[in-house]
Length: 227
Image (cartoon, rainbow, N blue to C red; front, side):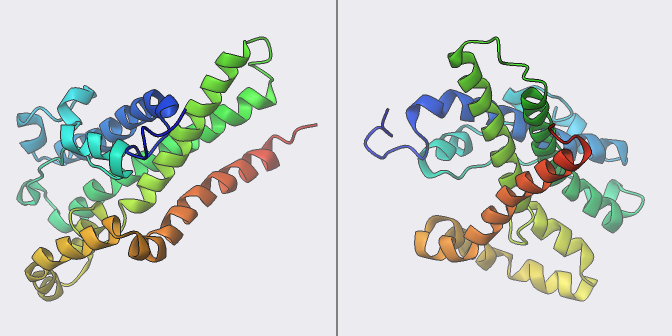
């Protein structure tokens, strides 16, 4: 089937799989931020009801819709008060990092599941429709989460990579960076929404995310060779 006249970023027949993958990816990403911040002593995420695996709490309606239209979107950010951490900068870095790492972990788990389904021929007795559905879902689970892992590490607001850079830099540099934050958002929008620019800047990052899938697959092949 077509893309509804080009209005959607994905073919309409795979939209249910993409939506399910995003439910998992966005929910676990934001839950990871909230859970670790809560464990580090910041009550803000718990007070706002974010320490939960309920997708309704984490999904942003506009951000989710844009995924299907523009191929780009977002979830509701988890508000963190670093002043509540005993070691604000170190714990701030960890809290920012666990979100992207959750996507990396999901992508890796997806590779493992897909590999062993093939390794044990687990779906050989299933119908063609079931085999195709499982394959499409797992491939989206892997690719979208690995791309989200890399994408969220870009050091521009409002992404996690910016927060990590902010906590890594000396305080004087971090203050200068904060003054430029309003312009950084415009730069971010240009990188994402202007195709000639995004192909050059974001394209290699997305390619790297996809290549991680092949790295994981190579590890599994080395450990559990097919023979």
